[in-house]
Image (cartoon, rainbow over all chains, first blue to last red; front, top):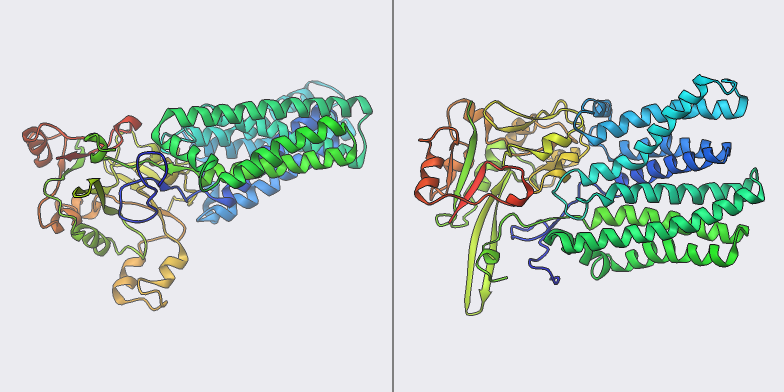
Length: 300
Length: 205
């Protein structure tokens, strides 16, 4: 039993906290690929780095749908997910992916072959792509924070963390690809390295704020944060999310600069940390006890 | 317009779980799926320990978060306030399940239906006639036995309860059974009221 006020009861007929188990690793992987793809595309587009833009589109256009379909109970009917953009973030997200991928391909073709000649149409396509990419990068956070059932998720910091991790992982992948494939000048590499360091600090601050807000918000949030930092998931959370995902990249980039080995260690560390964060935030999501008479009577 | 809901009289509930069995029979629920559960809570310190039974089911919320997040339009509210899932429209994304603060949704898998209640893959005649109503992969939940309600009957869990701890009726009708009981007992408590989902299930104690 944790230090909060009721036990974790699993599927038993006891009153207490229950793990959500509807969204698990496949959904977390889909979220990971979506945010990673949107971030990689945007960061690479800023640096006119076509290889990164293509990888970003593949991540969002192939990786994300594949894992969504793996998760989906009735994949054949998954097209129906576009039907309620008026109220569902899942619908809005799917529509944004359907816009982002083809428009992003047009932007890549424009960068490679200059089909628009720098005209209005090319700029319009780029604007739509950027808007769609921003939705792709954040909608998962909105989908999680939208409802009040899982207290850990029910915070405005959830979409902010989605955006931070999208930009961080996008910067990591762009820098890694540029180190391996070339294509960016030394000035751009140094700028990417500084952006990388800055985003690591920002992401760390957002993570700590999210945990603090959840712990001090509701009983369910307190239970989830306790699971993440002290109990069931503390080892992977400390080791992978903070250790591999934040501390290791900070050290590697701080001391290694833009050296390929430092970039490799930092980028892989960030990807491991980001993926672990996505999985563990799902795993630590709990439903609160519906009604407690012991609590009402002051016995807990 | 009606507003169907339920009141649980915790002084009457003895935790026999007849409601759970009645529900499973009425709805032919596969192994591991429950539309209603009677939870128990123990409190106090030995030798002064007490146990209270807390029946739970879908609260058919007026501001149902499950309906708001459903991307396919499968979850909807009937005119009488019963929240339903259309199995033909459900894509099994689980959004509704994670949005329900009361953990009252289940996903029915093909494996679950193939395995059957006895886990041997050989379905009884009862299971064969009942499992046809489920689409594998979709999310299912309590619908207050809407087919029975349409026929003017109470849900199966209500008629099965030997102590009349479950009281079902229309909250829009001032003379309905749940309204009368709530008046007599000085009101009821909604589960997780702070979630602002406006449940149509109340507890009186």
